Image (cartoon, rainbow, N blue to C red):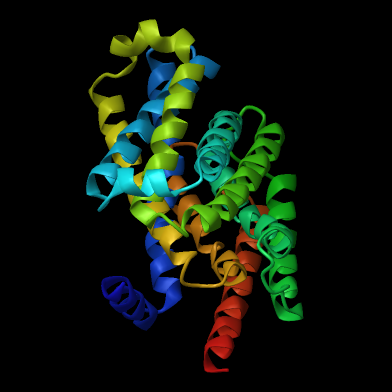
Length: 313
């Protein structure tokens, strides 16, 4: 208990935006790297169907979850002490539901647009947390911040300007993925009562990865052909991203109010959009997407000032 208390005190000394920026840079890299994997397979003539996407995601999360469980202090003891329904709910939403929709959406939309749409998770947080977690309702200022962000997202979806084949359908799927992600973090609030962030996130990723791998059974005969050197490297990086970013984010959710984290989630799409533009050939930002991104940045500045005011009260 003392170690946890000391660690929480140390975390509190570091400004929350710094922690979110770490998660944002890690998560942001996932968009272009997943897209690069799809491009690599297309160049080799691989048909990227549901089975391939599910198996790819499943292997990634099995590796990430296994890594976290190895690093956790007492993962099996915490497993026995935690209601299994919440562990399964977290795995089913934060891993399976979120990434079935996310991988399909990313296959249809470009990386820059998909990255920007991740900020919709903040809206889901604001809507769900007061009802499911009985947290404080958002203040007027926070609603204004999210409203400005919503305008930015609307402009981005209206003028996607990226290399996706069906960007608007992809956008809807990514919005659905973010809803599942928000539900997963709600479930973690119950898992976290008897599990640390590494064990809780590890079990969620590992079990969800197994389910995704089973869903991708049609691609099993292609495993040796699919995972060449390039895809192995991408998979290992994505596993590291999942293990580190999810564990840190779930841990932060036990230290800071959910609605406060929600306002800072806008860092994630900005990092993802920039990294996609840098790494993926053919990605571009239209005028409306640029205006939308500026609105997101403006809402982030307001969110930061609001958070500072809350800390001084």
